[in-house]
Length: 376
Image (cartoon, rainbow, N blue to C red; front, side, top):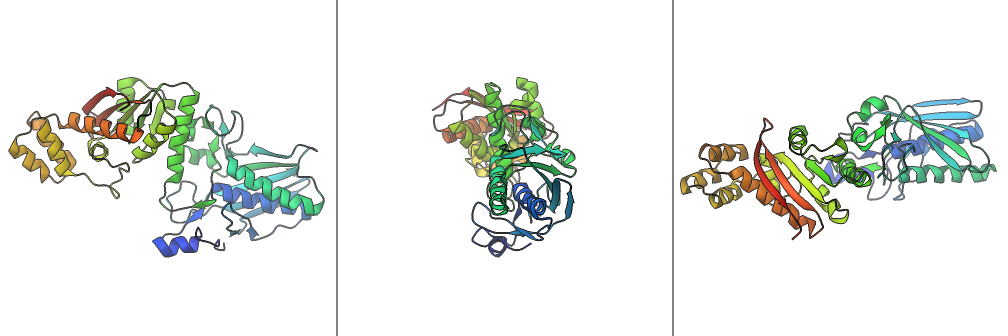
């Protein structure tokens, strides 16, 4: 595959970070559709096939499969996600195109491995294939650009499929978002930036949208499965109200700032929650660290002795600080939960969201809790 031109190109990404960028499933579907429709019109597959992305880049894709039959053509492309840990890396994305009924325009269908939307709140109506708006626009534009010069109306049925997509989708948010049967065809730029986690953050936003559409007044942002189980035990929330926020507390809070839900619970391991308490919005170990001096100040505020306070300040880990406080009956977990709740309210900037927080230890036991508090 050739490099796209411009600052968003793979070569530029490699030069700046040492990591290769890749292509979204939407870009691959567009390229496969362009090749298949060209073959349907001419009998010949362009290989490689070149497309235009929203930013003007013009990458070329080699075809992995091609077939043509009476009234249909299929092309497939292997997705290259670059150096991003993308669940769809090396997935085979297929597009099968057929001439549509006169006046039908471009119509999309979910083939094997592509999901169907079953819950409200997503950018497309219930019952539609999970092919997002930008990839749809790119495919429509590709069809229109080819149909005119060949004297054809742009009436085309496009079926997108992904080999083993239903299995891959189990490792995504799709089941919780009500997308059944497979993957979503995603992408806004066509380019996957390594470790940008944009797909995860987008899934957080879509999860909030689904919860709103289903009328859930209470959602929970959880750092992992252990804290999620604690939230379910404590509050009995349904799956659609659970947000797998991972390290992206900031993504939850910033989206709720503009799309409020009456109540938010934030739950996570003690160390990650101590980072939020200190004002960090990205809780990943590589991008924020536990501040034991901060923990020492919190412990002092809830009754830690000078000696205990000093030992916490030099503790090697947040867990060590928590255990030292537990041994002496100092409620450091509650202090961290309270500070995390207050930090979240600051980010919400007065949005009508009531927040409570839970701190969990590694065994899933709640070691800190802050009661619900509203806008400030």
